[in-house]
Amino acid sequence: MNSADDTDDHDTDEGASAAVIYVYGIVPADVQPEKDATGVHDAPIEIVKHGDIAALVSEIDPDQRLGAPADLQAHAHILDGTAHVAPVLPLRFGAVVSDRDAVIRELLAEHHDEFASALNELEGFAQYMIKGRYVEESIVREIVDESPEASALLETIRDQPEELTRDARIALGELIGHSLEDTRETDTRTTLEALSPLTDTVTVREPTHDEDAVQIAVLFEVDRQEELEQTVGDLAARWDNRVTMRVLGPTAPYDFVVRPKRED
Image 1: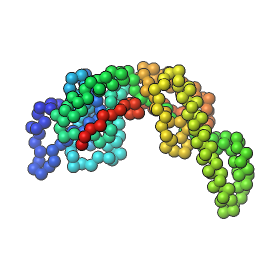
Image 2: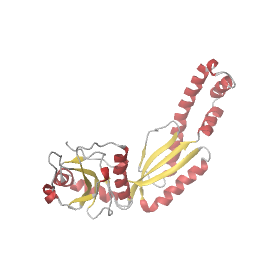
Image 3: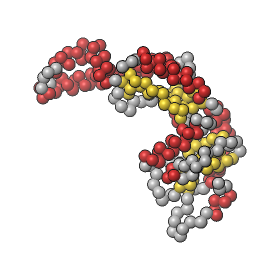
Image 4: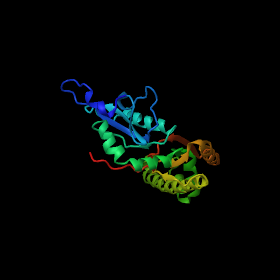
């Protein structure tokens, strides 16, 4: 592993751009990457330390573009893998500095106390995503059964040619869409209430699909993961064949970390 003092000793081919340093996140100084761990562009993961904190980094070729799905996956893989064993402050995808000295100067030294305090607060915690997905047939039936207007529209279009019921079909689709928004809000509140005895450190995410029922990030103790899974499992049993529920994690605390601004 190279130290910050010997980065200028790397030979580069004539005309080639010098490697730059990609930064994944900030960790306690005693964290060490797994042997053979690789990140973006399959580059080996290294540690740059300063005081009580360190940065997870790797060398990359500045001429090689970032942004491929594999790059995003590698970035998350390093951070989420670390979150299993140690607190980590994730940096946004694409954080690059000129060299290891810049990692210390622009990140670690400038924000040392802030980072150290945040890592201390995160000790033993990680982010979990609670995701619920509607069972389409069940939720549409529920909405129609609870809405006389929807029931009437459905009866209008039943067994009729599509070209003759276009307006009714559009109206039914819009009604179901609006009802689904209200149902999602109700189900999200129900989930938050179920989680409240465990934690109030939560972030509600916007749906990314029409069938999304619940998307909630929670910051939770890793050694109490089974309690979280049990609570969500009880809710899933209550919503059997209506909403499928999952707990994803532990991951890095993406929704709970305020990242410092860095000048390019």
